[in-house]
Length: 247
Length: 253
Image (tube, rainbow over all chains, first blue to last red; front, side, top):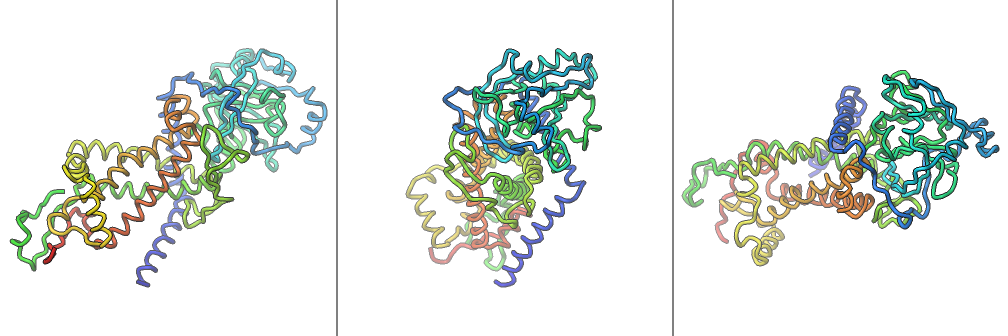
């Protein structure tokens, strides 16, 4: 029995060591990573391009909408904006556009809004339902007149992880989706700081880390390769989260 | 489960010193068994790592830290020996889980198609007349409890407890794992809202996903215990080569 027990112990230890070794193998990680493209193509295949995320009613709201990631961008620049009630916050729209824009936050707040009560799904597993008020991103992109070469929209954020700025990116299918908005309000109030004040992205068919907060700049690009680490987002660059976060 | 020995008459007619070898598992069954065994273990272990990221379960559409959890494991509850990878890494666990999920789906679909086509399901898995009678099930439970496993020709067919558990895993638990897994996808919920409604909301689906995983783990434990009790070398050999040494009939019944 001792030998059998030892056999099982050694066997499971080597299985675990084997999994960890595979996990550190670039080739094996490449095989695992190929599933992301398969998942994206499969989900896009069965989803009508404009399929809407479920919209809930006020009765369905989470009593408390928790935040995650940065709860307060620690830069002096952000502190100054916060002290000014974001009166001088502007969102730059540039890159592959015919007309660069610099949109004052007041303009985003006073433009007719889309209001959507949706479920926010975090990559960790939790969900919260909140009511978002914001301007469809498509309106902004149309105003800037996207170049036909543009394939991705990159969101540059005010929060930093160490010395790295947070950023995220989505493709044009999600960028022009009717529920993809630049949200300036949550649950009938201006956006609180932990949830991304003064403006954040909502991209309702993807997980929470795609929903960039504290947006300062929206850049249209042809390729993500030249943006920071080249994988399309802070978590994608640093910890190998999927760029396509549809599941 | 075919008897390939060509000596399928009453056990008494076979010379007792010759072990009777029967062909018990066909190739598609054996391939799927091992591919699926590996896949399910990877899914369970990477799944536990994913659950480590938020080890609380809820009922309904939403659920987060301020909401009532029906099950709360406390912070990072699952130890390294039970997870893939062995140190906390949600991103890597998701890569494993979401890649092997495709193997799980493809394996199940192909196995079901082949097994309906070659009639493995109809012939070997569907209970025969009378097998579902409570008296028959009860006698099988008693036989299992006394560790009296079938011998002779009876050992070449699944008994009713095997049939019930295999059918439950193949037709209920694995499909439920896949479907509740899909409803954890915000993209799929937009495409197929009826699916997440079927399970009562995303957090309910996540809870059901966990409960089915626990049921599959229970199945694996009982299954392995049965293999060990019934003769591990013969059982494992039969699932590798297909050939099974038939236990001789008992002298006294």
